[in-house]
Image (tube, rainbow, N blue to C red; front, side):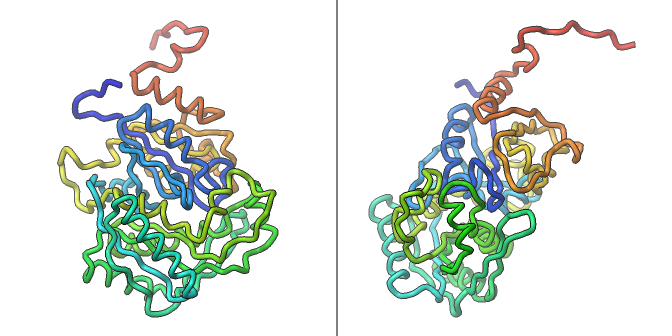
Length: 354
């Protein structure tokens, strides 16, 4: 691939969390999409929902792991992204986690230090249980509440001020009593992730307050063996913790820059060449912000979601494709500066403007 000097081809890939996306609504099942797009662009910007696969992950040298709230601020032009070589990660553990399950999280963090060479500070346990509660919206999307947000923020602040943490990994104790039908549907590859929305709330709170990268992994008791678990959900069946993927993501997550600086290594929303998003999820803050910019928006029809917010009623100009395979073709043509109409079997003549 040939890159124009000073003008790297930058793609933003979004699959909103907790909305039952057919692709990207499960345990890292959008990661193959990210890997493919990363091969045809210089910089891929995406978020934890796309790259997280519990104990599974894939290092992409040109991918930037950006939490959802930070991604919205970035797309709006309020924040920029500063690439880093390595972050020091602070580990924040919910006081509500049982001792044995807590030890599993600490062992997972130690394993990434010893095996992957990650820089992780000493951990902090919140001064009170976070008390996570799960909710479902009328649309079917998942969300949740945190009973002790103060405890969450105090723990994160302690890691930042005392341990010098540059990114925060949170493990919250999530309820084991999840709607059985909804959870069974999810495990069989046909429902909404019942915990994803609440996970997003936790990371949003930290990023909004401290303006540094953050991500969340739930602590749950091991699930009973089920022979009907779908491949899309199977990554979450592999062990006692979902922590490894977020530690790998946070290790090189870009830092947020809250004041505009014209530096060559910073990335701003004006640098985004293309956004790829499910066709029915165009109501996201990031998509709405970029709809009024020079960014080419590619919407993918086959990635059905529970949101049903399409670009046409919003007056959003997009290039609609059926699949991510087609989206890859559009991105290749866009990068090459080729008019998409010239790739069809017939090309119309120019019209005279009177």
